[in-house]
Amino acid sequence: MQESDRAQSPFQKVANASEIPEGEARIYPFDGGEVAICHTQGNYFALENMCSHARSPLESGPLANESQIKCPLHGARFDVKTGKAMCLPAVMPVKTYTLEQRGDELWLAKK
Ligand code: FES
Image (cartoon, rainbow, N blue to C red):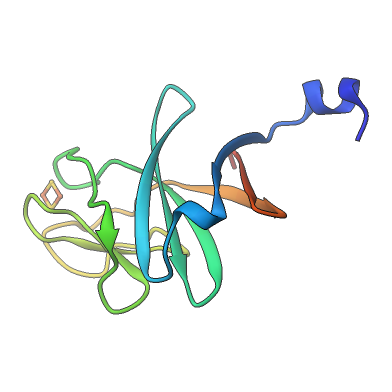
């Protein structure tokens, strides 16, 4: 990739895959806020780090049921692939981002 192509790319390098253990989530700054990057079954997924129930940050650390990220405030869980709310009290999804893995690097873009 040429340097001029890189400047126009919507993707930003956010993390290294090796920093995020299988079955866990880690929080990183992205797009003026924070993103939760989740590692499950060999794949990586990125969600806005903001619960849709009462706008609290989601939980860094182990995922629930292998593929759900939890909100520590009232216990809502979200599917890491789609952002869909999986249990009350949340009913609205969490925003997801497009993620590309380039070697050990994880790059994100807004959808
Ligand atoms: S703020 Fe997340 S479940 Fe209430």
